[in-house]
Every structure is written in C-alpha cells, then in structure tokens.
Length: 107
Image 1 (cartoon, rainbow, N blue to C red):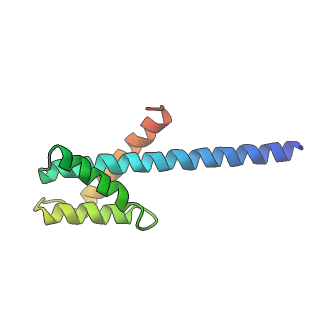
Image 2: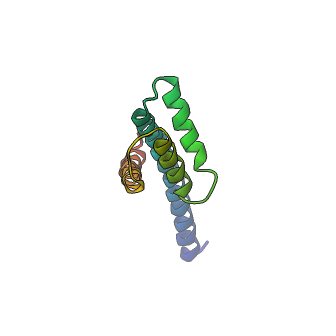
Image 3: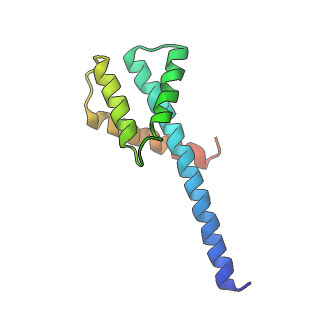
C-alpha cells in the first residue's frame, strides 16, 4: 500500500467519524430542542419525552433542519406561545453548539 493510499484511507475514516459525530449532535440537539419547546408549551413528565422524540423523528422527513424548525415553530405557535421563527433558529444554533461540544467530549 502506498503512502497516498494510506492518506486516502485516513481521510475517509476521518470523514466517516465526522459524519457520525454530526449525526449524533443533531439528534441530541433535536431532543434538547423538543424538551425546551415542551417546557414552553407547558408539557410535563412523559409528554415532554414524547414530544422530544417526535421532534427527533421529524428530522428524518427532509434533508436539513427546516423540517425540525417548521415542526417546533408551528407547534409553539399553535399552543399560543409568542415566539418568532428567528428565536427558534437561534435556540437551535445554541443547542447544536452545546450538542457538538458534548459529543466531542464523549458525554
């Protein structure tokens, strides 16, 4: 095996690891976002966990984060919570940064 082949395999392994970590961070962010939104809507106990799971599942509908944003924003709005789409986007960004840090640290 040549040095070039070894470097290529190294890059491929790094890419796979990065993608796995990003997937985990995204799922963790979605779960935290669901819990946050559930709190704003007044959900408690098992209903909070159920809603958080529904938010995680909503991310599988379309590529990207728009499906999650749409679900959470519309649910909040439907529950009478006064919030803007921009505020939900900012919370998503904040929670994603936290989730990436946690995944990187192995928490």
